[in-house]
Image (cartoon, rainbow, N blue to C red):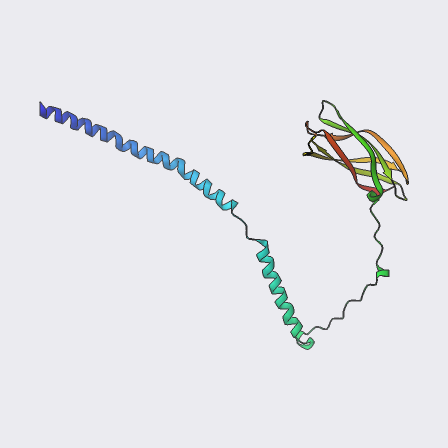
Length: 198
């Protein structure tokens, strides 16, 4: 009987080992199939997120090359350089045309309020625009910054007012639709950004 028991155990052992072999190979294949893409993704992420070469080192190399080139040209005689170019004429301050100030420089908002419109997502701004310029302005662009009550910035919106404001005067614009705003916005601050002469 002992012989029969031993044979039964050997057959069970063989069948057990026979079952483990293919299972181990399939698990290894499964692990490789899962881990290989993960390793590739991690490697590509690390490669793309690595720090780019510093621009300072590149500009320093270019600057040192330029300084060395200028030193060589300064030590060389004009005959060896081979070019005798006349110096550019000096420009006197009287010859420079005066730069006019922007039309928006003379504009400012003396008073403003805002409220919500629509279903609470639209901003309607009422503002008084003053023109201190010596000329009339038109197409005034205003920029409004919306924030929470604690001062945290939320939204920026711009709007062009297609109207004319006469020189040395003021004009009130009521309920201008500036755009959609964040639902948590409690404060608005608008300022003129650009304008053109009328």
